[in-house]
Amino acid sequence: MSSTCTDNCEDLAKSQNRSKALMLEYFTVGYNVFEGIASIAAGILAGSIALIGFGLDSAIESASGGVLIWRLLKHGKIPPEEEEKVEKKAVRLVAYSFFLLAAYVTYESIEKLYLHEAPEPSLFGMIIAVLSIIIMPFLAYAKWKQGKKMGLRSLIADSKQTLICSMLSVALLIGLGLNYLYGLWWADPVSALVIVVLILKEGFKALKEEKLCTC
Image 1 (cartoon, rainbow, N blue to C red):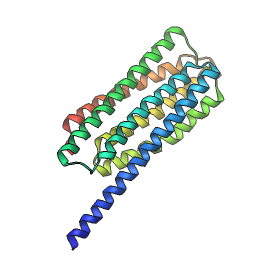
Image 2 (cartoon, one colour):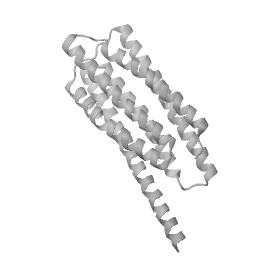
Image 3 (cartoon, one colour):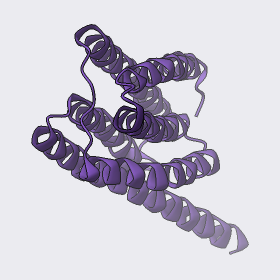
Image 4 (cartoon, helix red, strand yellow):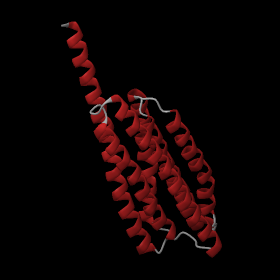
């Protein structure tokens, strides 16, 4: 009787953790879809390549969130051997999304530096960046904490990509602000290139963890 009660309690806890993690990922995808559409619209209206690029970055973050939703929907519903394979695949896909993000940010930044493309001031764009700076760190921490609790390296890796999204928001805001106040048009792409180093580091770290993964 006691054993049955313990098993039921464990199953309930696992179900609650899974539901919480899924809610975090649904919010991630939903917010990034909104952020992406709003950033691209604001970028087109202001003629800002920086804002349009920021919107496309959000699409990559949404893709990473989609991978985690697929992963979490299978969590606890398949045999342990299959669970490990799915976890490894999820970690690997999140790692690839880091590399895709790094490649895109590098291309955009170098293009801006080469063409001397200055980010146009946009109040709406700055509001989007500030919202991301406020929301994303809390979301990243919640996903990291939940990933630790559930022992899911894929969720932990995705939490780091969410944090990087907030860093890119800081770079965008700095670029818009410094260009508006001091005419430093190159601040945005240079800040983004510095962040690329961190993105690549996290991508390789995720691949390494995928090889070491034992669920």
